[in-house]
Amino acid sequence: METLNKLAIEQEKLGLEVQQLLTNMKKDPTVRKTAEYCTSKEEVLSKLWQQIQSNHAKINELGMEEHSYHKTDYFQQIESIFVDAIAYIKACREKLQASAASQREQQSLARITTSSEQSKLLKQQKVRIMELEETLSVPCGVGTPLLGRRRSLRRVGCIALARYGPPRGWLVGTFGPHC
Image 1: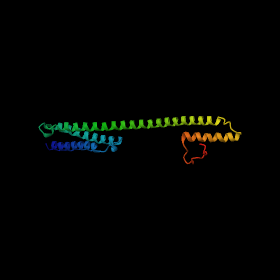
Image 2: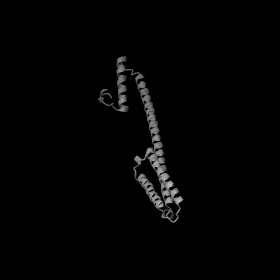
Image 3: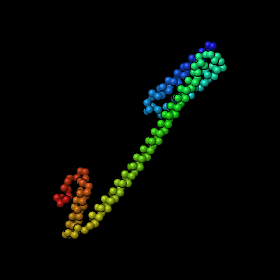
Image 4: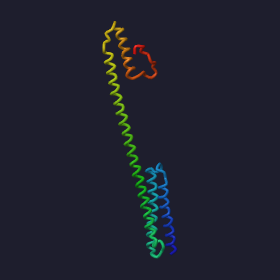
């Protein structure tokens, strides 16, 4: 009878440990719940469960169905808490995997966005270069070639200012009052 009481008390302590472990896991912040965290909690639960099963087998060998351990069906209560704890760990792992997949997806979208933005900027730059070449190739038709060239460059400057505004650091009126 004494052995049975000792085993029942030990089962009660182990059951409380499992309950406390589950309660603490639920209280822990999400930031702490990493893959290593889940693995370590699972190992602790596994060791506790092995001890609980071992003690339960010893209690069953001793018999005494009238004992409070059997009447309260304490093993089933502990088992229920254990199953809840394992399910909680599994849910934590699933959240971690979903979070990791979401992060990978966001990173890949960021790369795609960056490359599409770059290609958009490159296309815009090509169009502007073509416009500049077209403006430079149009003959002015006024005066000597030197004057024509100067007027053409001034005209390019005026067009650029009109389209894109003054570049950073440039003084307004650089191209003269004719713009």
